[in-house]
Length: 213
Image (spheres, rainbow, N blue to C red):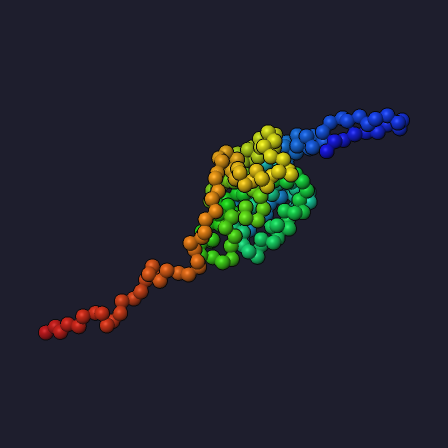
């Protein structure tokens, strides 16, 4: 996309600069983020430390917004349930381009302990929306969140991916620092409990009967 001005005379337009490059350079220094927090209270309470005086996210140019149409960065925290999945996808679609996602916490990355033998949780937020930076931890420290935002800013400045090709890069590089190879395997979890692993009370018929005099 190019920005050009036309004079009143019939002269050819003058191309000033590439608009997409200007947006990227400005956006990396002033990200506006929105938070999509689930039921998990531990990570949600940690978000209060980030806007306090000790860490002060405002010095990084992060301005919180409650409306997704005014945000270009979303922080997902907590386990994503099937009921909340549609709300998350709708919120992501309402954000203007370019938009970025940071998955914060082990529960939002893999589903956590709540995804074990559970029918109502999503095993990772990347099953719903593309994730740019993964931030593991339960919960992650504020210093780790600052490091994740720094990596995201480097990712924007180095132009590792473009907006139209981000889905392709998302499949190749799932993490910022490590290149993963994803193999499609069939799940062994059928939803049925292994009866052999369940504790069974001993039958009274198996107890030998003894007479004591």
